[in-house]
Amino acid sequence: MIRLLKQALALAIIGGLAAAVIYVTGTPSTDKQGGNRRGGRSQSEGPVPVLATAARVADVPVYFYGVGTARARNTVTVRPQVDGRILSLHFKEGQDVKRGDLLAKIDPATYQAQLDQAVAKKALDDVQLANAQRDLERYTKLTALSVAPKTIDTQQALVGQLSAQLKADDAAIANARAFLDYTSIVAPIDGRTGIRMVDEGNLVRASDVGIVVITEVRPISVLFTLPQQQLKDINAALSAGSVSVEALESDGKTVLDRGSLQVVDNQVDQTTGTVRMKADFPNANLQLWPGQFVNARVLVNTLKEVVVIPTPAVQRGPNGAFAYVVQDDDRVALRPITLSLQNESQAVVAKGIGASERVVTTGFVRLKDGSRVSVAEPEAQPDGSNGAAPAASISTAVSPASDAAAEKPREHGKGRHKRENAGESGGKKAREAETRKPEGNATQ
Image (cartoon, rainbow, N blue to C red; front, side):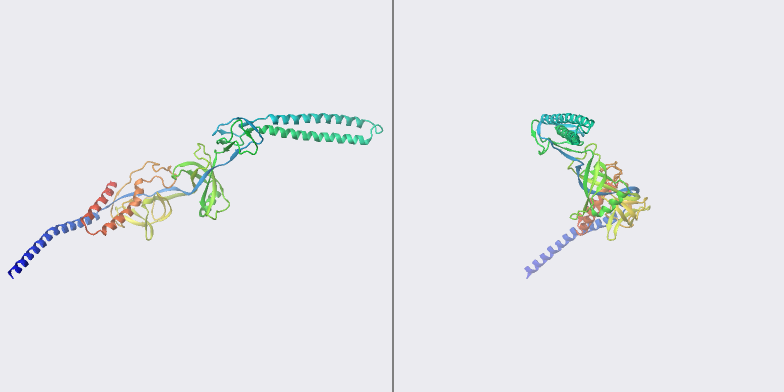
């Protein structure tokens, strides 16, 4: 009995000591965690650091984009028109040639002989015609008793026959001279020669593949397609005048050449729902090459004096697009907006924001309607830093920091949701502090 009492007393003492240890070690952690919560609340109640940019008024071009292929306006395969042996070639591969330049020479001996034969035949017929005409003059001077009328008629027919023979001789001479001229192969168009398909000394025929291919590369054409939904605007722009087209590199920014729209195909491709179009480009520096894939940018309209803001300032909500406008008291107002045009860098606001108002582009983590903010102006970027030419599109003059800020609110929103669900661990506030620290530095 005494032994049981001693064991119970020992267990009670051990349990009390354990409870004391748990109490002593647990209380400071709770107080510390509560202090962190209070510190977090006090920190969240301060001004929100943001970047803001003033909306501006500008003329904004409206472009349609398509993918196409450069194609030579004229392509000619130079073939021999007569049979013979090639005596000489008078061009180099890849050489620019002009219309009429000598390209190759075929042995002309046979065709020169045919021409000489035709010329000699004409001379013979010419002498016979002269003799027949003199006989006819003699017959007509004699009386009817000396020469029968039938003889005179026969002589007149002979003169006519020889006159017709002379015309046939002229045609034979022209034909023989043409064949002789064909032995000198000349360039039919202005262009650039390709790789030759025959060498000197070879026997060629009129049915052969050819000697060389000449392509016209200055100017050059680009064939591209646009969706049928844009056909109405394209036709309206063509009716108003010339439509400018730019050929772009694969990055969609570098302009290779500028030309004009020439043709809109007369039917829509029903399998793809697109319309083929052709534009001509000067191609002075040979930026475009036949067969090259290029992006085409068609200028269909220019919006005059519209309000433009950076695309990162545009936010999306259940009720549509909105933006945060910085007011004079350093508080933001949530402003619903209507967009008429938007791309990856800038947006045209049709309604909701004035030209003199500032919009928030970075710092949406703890931002809400009426929040007090600490505004820092974005650093100015040099013109053309994004690779596009100034005033080429509505994507110019935008800070790269704004592009990064366009994705930042969504990342912070997901991170904050995860941290709120993580419980009240001590690591929660440390992660929030690390997340806010770089953002605060970015606004300084």
